[in-house]
Image (tube, rainbow, N blue to C red):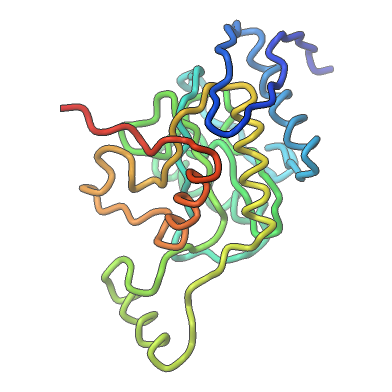
Length: 240
């Protein structure tokens, strides 16, 4: 039987532009806070799929714990992905990340095109989604390709540009259900953490120099719209 945890970290209603009051949370309360996030998402009529339900394999032992999250990074699944079932994509991403010597899937949450929110790496552990910038950061991936044709500048991009030139669009539109689910997840995270910054992967310090185009131009438009709605700040400036 799973252990029961009590927590005083109850969800708070946060108005746009306001930050919640910090709540000290003990290590034993973190499992309860994870549950509070899930319940908050479900209370907003979003579907939440736990790791065990999409077939996640167990992460490596002794992962680095993290907490006091203040930042969210938005990702897209990449140019090799499309709107296929979320569980299959999460399995594929986890397999790829483990093959790259990650401790587990790098993202804390994935959202598929139907609006399902799928649990990735347990929120109690530090993610691996932004190179050298994972402390205090929650990684969320939209399970789709959100680039425009020219992004990447390689043969894939050239092929997409050619298709566009003959009237075949290869640019995806983010489904409303996926956007709604993302907003619900952000609301749930803001109810238990002091989230101040929200940005696309490539906006975080050091990422552009690594050639990152994630979450794509389409994804970046969404990032800017969400910042306008939530009054969250862009990622912190690089430290000198």
